Image 1 (cartoon, rainbow, N blue to C red):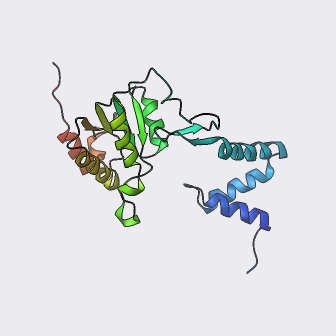
Image 2: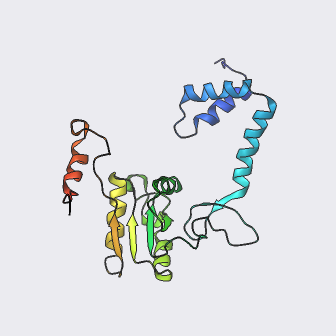
Image 3: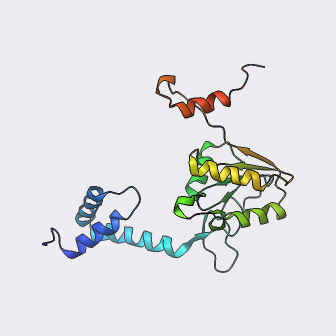
Length: 207
């Protein structure tokens, strides 16, 4: 079968297509865009990727992304910030979820990145997550509240339920993010699960 493009372009399209959220057409469009940019711009992109792989590691405490420091213990900016509240720990699935919580400006505690969720269909159990490291932190740090901030789906709910049961005998408050209607949404567009959770999580108005 005759290939449509020269080998290097085909290889680049295939590699771009492996990225999450990038389909075949998007990969082809990006590849041809990179073909048109100057050598300087292409080199800058290549160096940024290479530099990221060389200089970024995971935080030794919370497993957030952090700049690697060969001469010292690698810690992210949040863990090394003395202004963060050490008594409240927010458990998230991935580092990108941590960023989403930080953007709210509402959370002032620290984090723990599990590295995924329980998914038995894909062979992912608690052993494949950073649950052991979480338990170690709870034994070493003055945490009084653990906020389970997993996604509101089957895997996220299963992980949250597992953590609640695991910590049932630990003297710590375990909370879960409230699930409900997005601000500004209309009831007619809400699905049954979201609306049901909004009803379950209702609270009194006024004082």
